[in-house]
Image 1 (cartoon, rainbow, N blue to C red):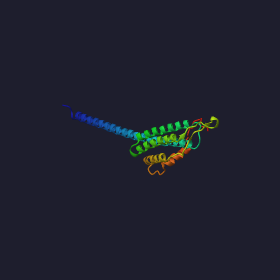
Image 2 (image 1 turned 45 degrees about the vertical axis):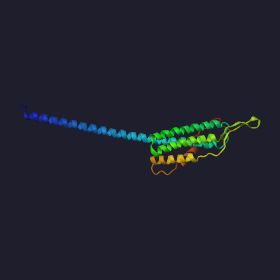
Image 3 (image 1 turned 135 degrees about the vertical axis):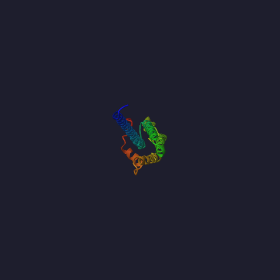
Image 4 (image 1 turned 60 degrees about the vertical axis):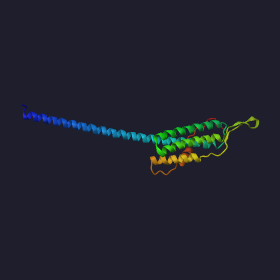
Length: 201
């Protein structure tokens, strides 16, 4: 029969080993929970950054389209057809940015982004509808530059931009009072619009 001291030693060693294993298990669980929380936080931050970038890209594309249309409607152009094609390309870009934004958002904000994309398409179509492309009809068959025959109508487009910006600003920065129309119209004045090189009246 083992001596009492040997049995005591075995029990003590077992207890110590069990405590150590329990401590290791607890430490591992805590580390796993910490890593999980950090991963969740990083995913949320990445999603928030992606949404913020999408909002900025959509507003930027909208400003570029608005500026291009406004400039196009201000004068005659020898290659108005090129400018109309460019307006369509800008409208498509707004639509793509709107779809991207809608996928990263939900509810009213997603719908407002899609509505802005539709308004961009409608604005491009309006310009094409009201444009008279140049032709050889002047004295001596001189080429007559084309023009948009009516003033630009930004009412629907600006309203959609305003609605989107208000919702986006509230989502990112609660309490923001600036309107989307101010942002898009203001950005349009300074937006780097690349006009076709041959746009010389």
